[in-house]
Image (cartoon, rainbow, N blue to C red; front, side, top):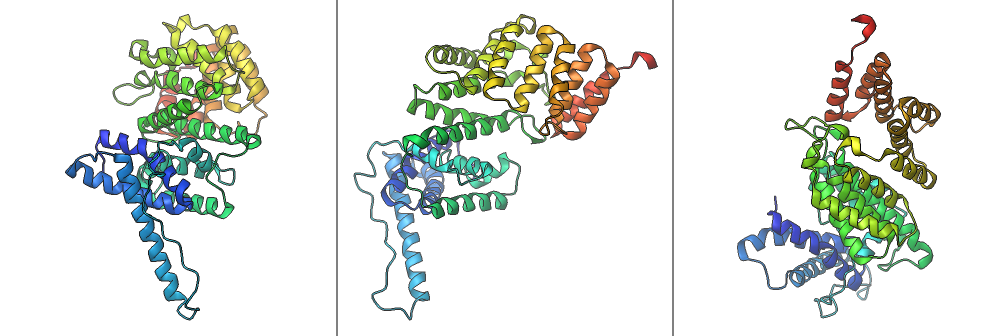
Length: 418
């Protein structure tokens, strides 16, 4: 069932609060999460017809608690039937009590839920799925559509994740200080992955999925409100805002990709740029540098350039050197090669790519071939550029990227054959 936009926003905002209240009170994360999902469904059906209750959060807690009690009673009855031969005084499953004042206290458990959903015993894919459902309030169908997998597949993934958390005996509390940094790194990485999948979809007919980028920004804002002095949290939110600001100009009316240098910057979201620049400007002077802050600083330079020609590429190169030192990933090296090419010429960028060509993580990746083609085109080696554009087009599973890369190859002509 499709929810109305305002109702959907309210339910997503209340989801972690309601789930946190139940888990804090009763434990059993998996059962509580199922009960909350049923309460959300009930609200999406009843509230449009009956009107918004005076206390939406309390309404959801009450309904979810009743659903939980029903689950436990049903489970207890099933066990009694299966254990009919057991003693009359056998162990009974506890039934959830009615909600009390403690459940309705104004306590925000969002951060605790995020940390629990990003449990180190879960795969990254499971962390993402569970976070979007338990904290983001998305339905299983919505998550499945976002990641282009069957709903049954996503349901199994979420179910296994909840079972895994139950099997580990994880308590609903913040981890010890010694573990907190590692767990928060996982939380931020999950939000970063959600945003990136929304901004540039790995597959499918659309370049981007705004529902995912908006959800990632919403959750990042939530974490920032809880941890306003954490430089990397602020950096991640700034990075998302500065990147999302460019989305309106990234495609034409027919969905075709428009590269950064050719975008109409008047279409960029100036409000997001101003907010992102302000965030990163404040955190750079008050917190130790991290990977998200450095990426946000690079995005801020792009965001403040009135034209592509105004971009301060030497400063971007310097920031990439710092980022490569702290986070030496293949994508960082690729972007660094582009920045070096823009600052010092395509030969310098191609030299960096030659050094990275031995990284097994780069082999067969379409973006490596696309960047090489772009720099070869800049250098005037059109035949090689055309070949690598086509190679990249064959490797990508994103239809807009494939069309763009094939289009670039088609536009290049070899002077020797003219």
